[in-house]
Image (cartoon, rainbow, N blue to C red; front, top):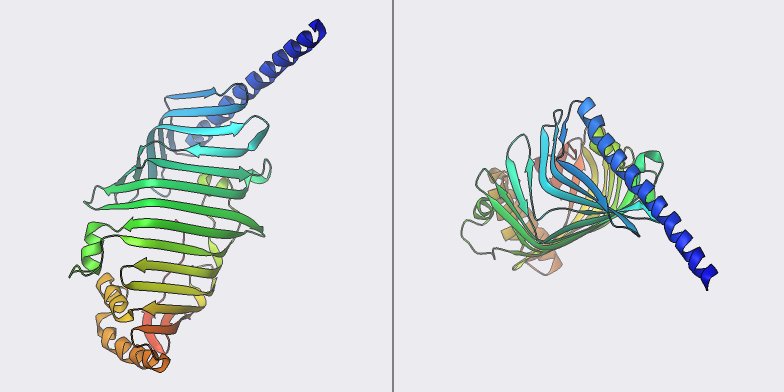
Amino acid sequence: MKLVAWIVGLAALLWSGVWLAGAITTERLSRGWFEQRQEAGWVATQDEIETTGFPLAFETAFRGVNLADPFTEWAWQAEEFHLVQQAWQPQSLRAIWPRTQLLATPLEQLTISSDRMEALLHVRPTADFALVQAEADLAALRIDSDLGWTSAIDSARFEMRDAGEARYDIQFDATGVSPAGGVLRRLDPRGLLPEVIERVHASGEVGFDRPWDITALEVSRPQFTRIDLEELRADWGALSLRMSGTLEIDGAGVPTGDVAVRAENWRQIIALGVNAGLVPPAMQGTLETGLSVIANLSGRAQDVDVTLSFADGRAYLGPIPLGPSPYFYLY
């Protein structure tokens, strides 16, 4: 029994040393990252970095964080931010955001609050910590802009998995999406729709020009090369929209390809597009006439199945030209 006790005590002592060395290394690397950002011209400060979690984890708390990228003019502030690593699996990171944080863009400042905002990241220890898998969960998210608008989401979950060659399987689900008040009044000035979009779902595979890794934060964001949309679905009151298809994206973010669209109560959806500025008002009558013919051929006048096409920088709904296509670009 004495021998067993001695062995257990020695093992505990050795593990304590291993954990302490790991904690010191974690803090040193964390401080080093802030110093590297400062050398790159960023504003990158923090009041305190502390690692706890003995004996099974490294729980690093960053307090008083202030990050600002002068090149993109994006900035982020948080009173506290946590990264948790299991001692036996340091390539797996759990990120925990505070209940309140500030995000500034070149156009506005956003106050973001939530009951829960967490993400689980699995990265490769080499290859600039390239992303293997990410899972993010949100609860009671609210965004307040200094421009006067507010938006909210009851709950949301996002998953992203490496599919090889800078391609990723992506799935997103959200419930209780409340558009900003000004946006809602613009989309639905007569107040015919509920204030909350019941559900939004998206799934598919997205290709980028390079993998997502630490350089996406430090240098620039990877850009789209291909989108294989398995399903995009939105349910908002009596309106229902389904989309699926494939788009090739060039270096300028211009898409080429076809997307199948199924719209229920499509006349209201067109009205929303006009109100949002996505459909030119002069095109509303032409769209309604053309889609009415297509819908009547299907036997359901309120529903329509049509193809949304992109070619040469232009967008077409069936045979009807809509105007310039959107750009797919991450700043």
